[in-house]
Image (tube, rainbow, N blue to C red; front, side):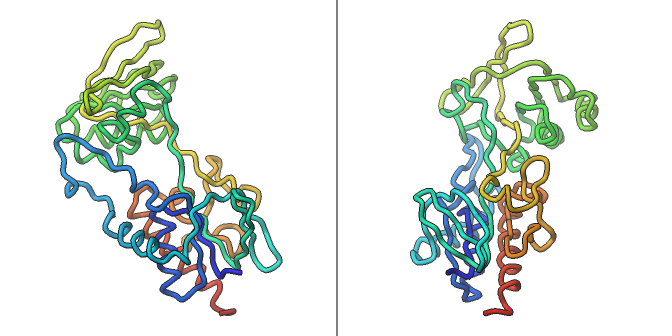
Length: 301
């Protein structure tokens, strides 16, 4: 039985695993890949890597260590986590079952997609899912934000501070009824298009424009230097949904020490209700979860 099993190989999971190794815990990281969201980096014709705060140096360092320490990782998906008399049992997709006294869930969240022509082709080439990460790159440029929820409004508001123009495209009504929506409606550099949907992304190497369709079926093209799909995140929390408390969005509720509602089960990164979906935030949350797990285990080590 392991002292700790970390589920998820993104920034939070990698950090938690390396911290646990430093604490001499018998730890295993289980993930289908290493790096998580850092494997996807927005490319734009006018930017260089140094202009973006990604936290890649930290994540890459931890990933290289885990690639070398083969005993501490297993590249596979997890089906479910369940209680065990001695702690927890982790059921893998292959059917294998592994035991651990503690578990850290760092499985991240999936972005909702449009599923339209051009989306896959231009993803991370002028088209991406995180305006909050890249907004400072769009000073005096034209941008498009797709979505009408809280995340889309927040993204549009941040872009509006620096961009020459922001087109906010929502599929339903209600944008003008929200606090940020009212603010955006007054901004001279923001155009709100309610009841419109994007049906295609077009470009040449990079996404250059989108085709939108209005409520009357009429189509038009909008040009942009960057397009952001902000339909919200789907947390990968199903494997523990019957064990711990989740918020209405399905995110794992954690306290300031990354503890869930079930003692011995911790969570970190985008799968939780912690503030901001950022790499550096996830790195910090991963370290916190590992230290909390160590403190929990310490009386019996």
